[in-house]
Image 1 (tube, one colour):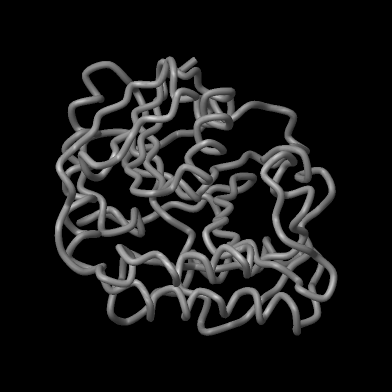
Image 2 (cartoon, rainbow, N blue to C red):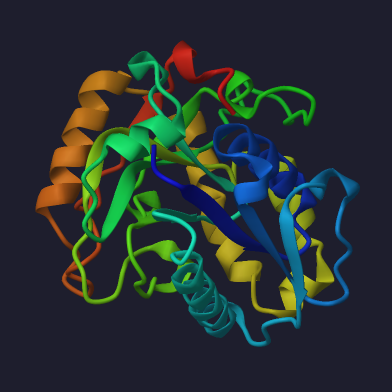
Amino acid sequence: MKRICALTMVRNDEFYLRKWVEYYGRELGRENLYVYFDGTDQSVPSWCEGVNVTVCEKVVGKVARADKGRIEFLSGVAAGLFEKYDLVIGTDADEILVVDPALGVSLREFLSRQPISSSLSGLGVDVGQNTRLEGPIREDAPFLSQRHYGRLSSRYTKANVLARPLRWGSGFHRVKGHNFHITKGLYLFHFGYFDLGRIEARFADPSRRADGWTKHLAKRSKTIRLCSSRKAHKWECSVRLARWVQTLFRPPYALNKPSMLEQVVIVEIPERFHNIV
């Protein structure tokens, strides 16, 4: 079995970090989690006990510049972790890398069996909210027991798993100088914009407005509108097609990123995933 760790960097994101720690701690062991708090004004929650936690000076700048600074920092951290680990997983705190439960294996078992030369990607699923059918998110129940729709999104098909020291692009979207490799049976569920009430609360966060997040947050509410208005397609054939399209096609501005060719594919997430996250 391979030695695997996971890392993330957060600022004012305890809601998502709690889920991140619970999930990856269960899959990999809390001692193999590395959490970096962006800013010395951040306090470390008591439920981070057993996790490797570091409080850092805040990465300054607007959204794009700060993202670049954070990913350069985390790429350097990941490079150092290869002295101890075979694989390093890097995600945002609102992203969960999940193996299809139909395979009957843990994340660690699945990744240990994969031949990875540089990086590995799961198929991106941007989880939304169908406001006609789904109410506000509750913290005391699994996310996917409350949210059953998502958009198959090349934006969240990220190079999250590294097999050697490499440089991630901003947001883990790519590995610089290398191609991406999407594997069957692995999914990256993004939960950052899956609740209309939480999006509205983020609009009200003064620090996010000051850092230029207003336009970014408004743009991300699009997934909720799509999940609420579009017909949801069947999962199995849709993910198979999306994986094929994203593997074959690239956006002209970034040939080492996947593309969905502007297709909007809303899917219903199968019941077997409902209690995983």
